Length: 259
Image (cartoon, rainbow, N blue to C red; front, side, top):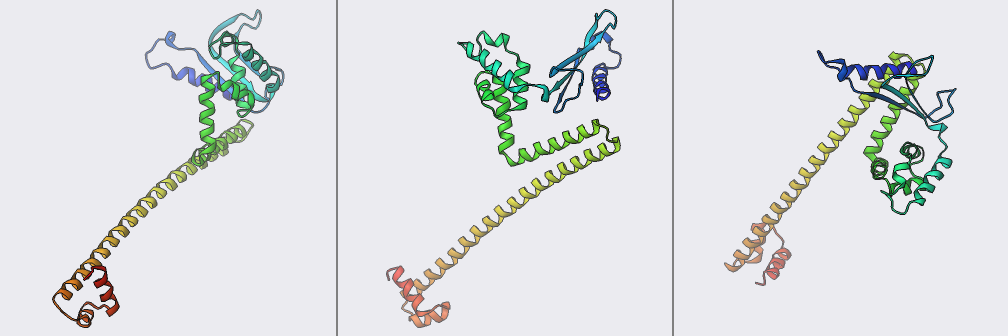
C-alpha cells in the first residue's frame, strides 16, 4: 500500500507541471490515506505524516511532498470525544469563541468519520458549519433510496480497492471496476426506462380524459336531439327507435330537461 500511495502522490505532483513550465511553479502536494484498518504496525498514533528528511541529522529536505495516514481503529472516539466536548463547554461564545483556535479539527473530523450519529457529533454540528453540512449530506444519502444505492456502490468500489491493495491481481481489480461501471450504466438505463414509463402513463391519462370528454359530448348531443324531437311532437316510441334508446331513457331525458 505504501508503494501505491507514493506512486499516486508522485503522479499528482508530476501532473501539475505543464510542458515548458518551470519546476519552481510546482505546488506543494499532499496525499491523505484514510484507513478503516490498522496498517502501520510500528506507529501507535492514529495520524502519522511523512516528508523527506536527512537520515543522519533528521533535517528536513523539503515539504513539497507529504503523505498522511489516518487509521480509524487507532482513534479513541470516547476519550477524544470527551476532550472535544469539554473544550466546547468551556467556551461561552460558540461557534466563534476562544475554543475555535485550539480545537483539533482533525480529531473532530475523525470523530465524525467513526460515529456520525453520536451525541458528540450532534453537538459539533451546532458549532462547526462544515460538519453540519457534511452531516446534512450524509443524511440525504442515507434517506434517499437512489443516493443510498449510489453510496453503496461507491462503498463496494472502496472495498474492491482495499482488496486490490492487499495483494489482488491488477487484472481482477480492473474487472471489478468494469463491473461497477456496468452497474452504473444499468442504473442510468433503469432511470431512463422509469422516466419513459412515467411519460407513457401521463400520455395515457391525457388520452383517457380526452376520451371521457368526447363521450360526454356525444351523450349531450344525443340528449339535445331527443329534446328537439319531443318539441316537434314526435312520439316517444318513434324517438326511441330512431335514437336506439329505451322509453325509460327518453322519459329520463325529458325529466332532466324539464320538458
